[in-house]
Image (tube, rainbow, N blue to C red; front, side, top):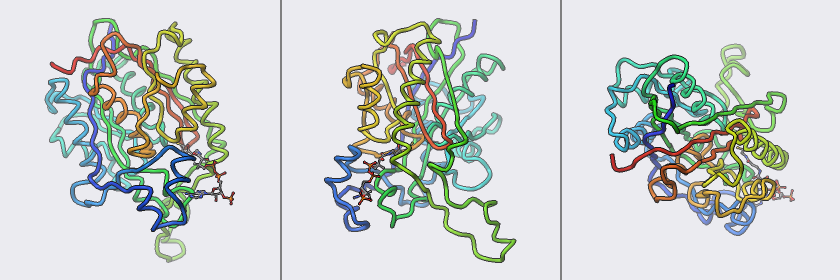
Length: 334
Ligand code: COA
């Protein structure tokens, strides 16, 4: 019997801190509005175009996860990256991270599922281990959303941030590890959150016009309701599939979009907010990086212990939503 164990976590945040007060001089907003409506106080923005690329942030997070697990980059078989902000249209962020890690013989590919990218990547990676006999897989969530934000749109630019998180999954026969993953999409509602122009939506070659900027557009208000419903439903699905109850869950790591969404999910599921790990006040919504960053912080702060059942829940553009339930076996002092 092959089980999928999570053996290392890591994250990497850009240096520059952009506070709500800083945003007051960029758009018509206030620290008070942003805190009250979202819970966010500040976020990190990648300003160093050499060292804070998507590839470099992702690679640094991955190296920390590998160091925790005591595994060398050359032992990696597969790299799966959840992102919508690869440095280039192609190659994939995963291939560029692979180069940073100096791994020359592994499969590397991206998964595009908006803010659910990490959970979709985790499901894909778990299946590779269970079905295809792969042994060591890096799963990374990384975004530089600041590069696709319209810094004149106060509805969106105050919400998002940059960063990277990573985990290492390893095939082991011992019980525990990833108990279940669940992913869902509703493409009929893609227009609630999307990038305004893609390379093929209005090809500049056809009308000889320069490429238009690639801005993120969002209907926050309608997304809010879907987020609460989808996150709650997919949490229940994870419990049902693993035969556990809410009482068995030690910690919930939700996608860090908005404190009010997280509170509403806690209310709906009737779980005490104390069991939710929240760090969005420091980083804002880092999309597919938010769950692995929070997971790494909670792990390194000693909030997750071997034997704990850890529930991850995500929601994002697509629409997409997903969950994973992990019986924790990660030892930090390997
Ligand atoms: N500063 C000040 N005022 C702002 C503002 C800002 N940054 N952004 C919007 N407003 C204004 C709006 O213009 C609107 O003004 P009006 O009433 O005069 O028209 C008012 O605040 C209320 O806007 P509304 O969109 O109804 O606020 P809200 O309570 O729904 O909060 C979000 C907005 C975006 C914070 C919230 O809807 C949300 O978090 N949605 C989910 C977003 C999400 O999860 N996205 C990613 C999914 S992964």
